[in-house]
Length: 269
Image (cartoon, rainbow, N blue to C red; front, side):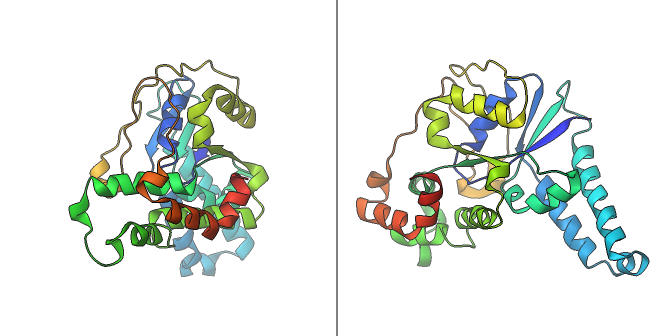
């Protein structure tokens, strides 16, 4: 049975690149964006309202059975179809919100890699994708770049909800249990970052070829909408340019930083 590690962080923050680098190691299996976390969450939510289970078992027995069920679902998900790999990495942004559940299921804190990126860089990436599909959003709260950033950072949007999960995870005290990976560091100097990944996972280091990273996972991006670009630029790992002054404007970029002080204090002091 392979070991399963989890990858969950911010969108547009290098998780796809990280998975392609990990996939170079023949002992590792990298997933594309996975639905496993959503299935686990649905399973636990359904169990919480299952009257039959409540009537048959004491709460402590029900909890233990649920924990075994979660573990069985995760382990069974990767019990086949991953070749000779002995480690599977499951990518889903929701994992950072499931730390307690994973802890109970495995009896120890899970290993979770959390890619992050300067919020201004994430918003710049979203804005560039929006500009390549302007017919999708022309009215209301998407009419201006200022309005778009407010929308994207709201708790109902894919960026804001992911940031809120990380913020809540910090409040719950899980920062020592996960490994945050700044996209800026991974793309600028990948080798020491990957060595820190292996050290955190307690896995023997594999000598990666950062000069020739290939696409190993594939996704049907139209399912994800206009922000679902999961194709990397194959070849050498390159630093990402800071273009937020160009795409967002200096004033808006500064306001984003001030309005999200908790994020910059935690990760970008």
